[in-house]
Amino acid sequence: MSTIYDCSVIELPRIHSLSGNITPVYGGEHVPFDIARVYYLYDVPGGETRGGHAHKNLQQLIVAASGSFDVLLDDGINRKVVNLNRPYYGLYLPRLIWREILNFSSGGICLVLASEVYDEADYYRTYDEFVRDARALRGKV
Image 1 (cartoon, rainbow, N blue to C red):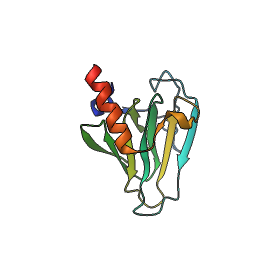
Image 2 (spheres, one colour):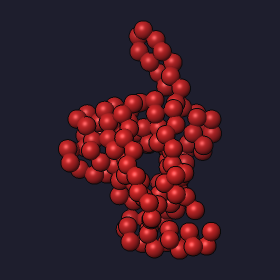
Image 3 (cartoon, rainbow, N blue to C red):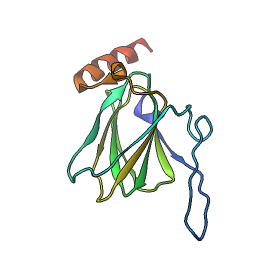
Image 4 (tube, rainbow, N blue to C red):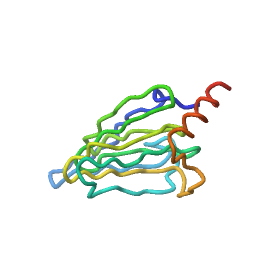
């Protein structure tokens, strides 16, 4: 059973150049899973929250590709907030962690690398259902 303490900020490689920097990311090397899907959130209005769900199996790496935002992490018992504001840091989220992405800066872009293709059946969309199952699973550990 994952807890918020299993979430970690990973420093990604940086290749510096006078003409601009680049950060390559390889699944299974820089992130602890093979990458099956990549998507990004942008043009998020000020004050809006994205995320608001958990995954039963999917793992993610969340990167502030531009600007900054906060990620609220919740394992059904503990909560913490991680601020992302550099494109070479990624927040690793194992399965069964509720997340909410908030406080987007102007022009903020949230890049997400995911271990699975989209599958609606993998989502916890309601917090109460997530907490019930997370606490039940934790009781079995």
